[in-house]
Length: 138
Image (cartoon, rainbow, N blue to C red; front, side, top):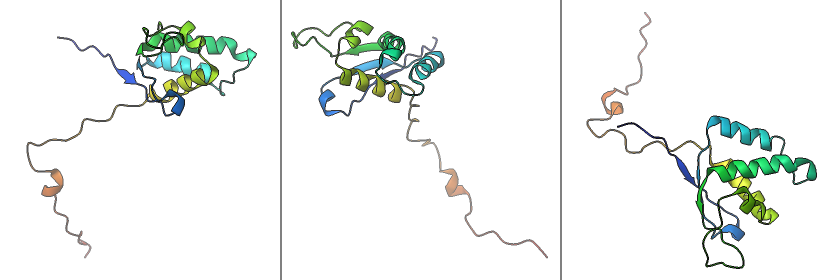
């Protein structure tokens, strides 16, 4: 049986206005990450000159989203909006800025190592004498 790498990231939003928003994304490839870095290089001010960069970044994020609980304001109990750049673009500026910042900060964080270590024998440090070294000079 082969190994299929399907790493997802549950984005954690700290902004109070987004406390109830949840989103899961696939981690990008290195090329995808480099695309995001190019799109956000030097900061991404929301000005007309950056419109194409912002649209490309929305597309990149939307292409990696797996799920979210974002619903239409007129139907808060309805189904989540489609995972598209258009759905992101329809949101207010604070939502978009927070989503972009959170995505770019969290998708490339290395995974924590497995904990616990080996339990099949004594620890190496228990086997190494810890006496102060003695001088061998004569």
